[in-house]
Amino acid sequence: MSAEAGPYASDEEVLEVVRRFETCEFPPDDFNHRAHLVVALCYLLRGPEEEALVRMRDGILKFLAHHRIDPASVYHETLTVFWIRRVRAFVERAGRGRPLAALANELVESCGNSRVVFDYYSKELVGSEEARRGLVEPDTKPLDF
Image (cartoon, rainbow, N blue to C red):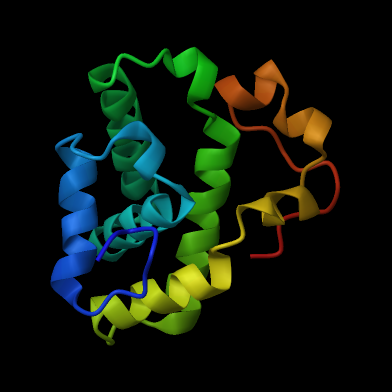
């Protein structure tokens, strides 16, 4: 089953998304928001938020380099941090004792709308070079997770 179709029928399907990301097998257009969420979930289940953030950032930059995509045109530090924090909050609420596929499906259901970032950040701030290069604080409302 593809990462964009969900739901995941098994833990192995979820782990396959991570494997395909880490080996740069996803075509760039197929590594969508849901796949990002699933990778972030797996990284957060394996270690602390700071470590998950480093793995996610490094993985995205490796993925972009592999596909010869200029990171300055795509990579966004504020969004990466936002979603790692949002997924961490999900993990804290959902708990770790359930099957990975169940957690991934619930995460995609609850966080699958990538536009939620605009509840916290204006489009102008998200689109700024400052937000792309480094973490900026929300300007619409404070993070509540």
